[in-house]
Length: 265
Image 1 (cartoon, rainbow, N blue to C red):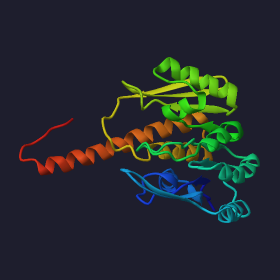
Image 2: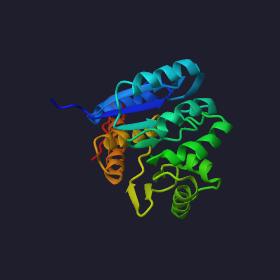
Image 3: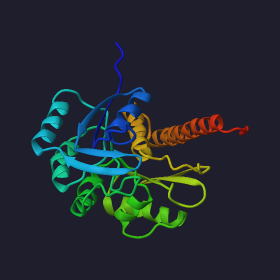
Image 4: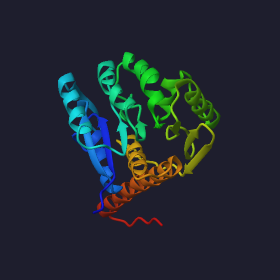
């Protein structure tokens, strides 16, 4: 009998389905991985913003963690929204005992700009969780929060990546450059190597949940035994294609409403 690789996501929810554990589980499924989820926070959010956040009780969080780890061993684990120090303190012992890759998506701010984590939790994440990670996946604002300086160009991204590895101790870091001007460049830094992916910038405002999906695909690929480079490469291609497909669908809808034809190659 053939068994699917198993991946676990520990994160908040999104009733609109575009981010959080909903996006993670869809991404795991799309990459041929069996997905499990532990909910840290109930988040009322959509593409327009975050309306309300309620954290699950400590008892419920611990019960979920015990339910998973006492029964089914994941081949990779991802954490997303860990909004408070208390939540992180409860999860950290489980992360320390992992014998599989751990992908840390340092979710701090939603695509809409709404804060998803408090100040003390940011400090705890940097000092207690980053050293446990196989790879972390910050976007530029998140990377700036970690390194405490502005990232304006490629040189700043490289400086930040090397600093994160040296000062905070993850095995690797991929910094997503979607917030910079020009092409969309992503950098992967490991202890010994540096890789860069570049793709044309897709002009669209529909990027809700792209960070969650990117990290989830990396998690799925690591669960299948792929290398860090292979996992990031697949995630970059996956998220670029997803955005292009959505843009194409929108163009088709626009075309149907116009009284004159539009053309694209």
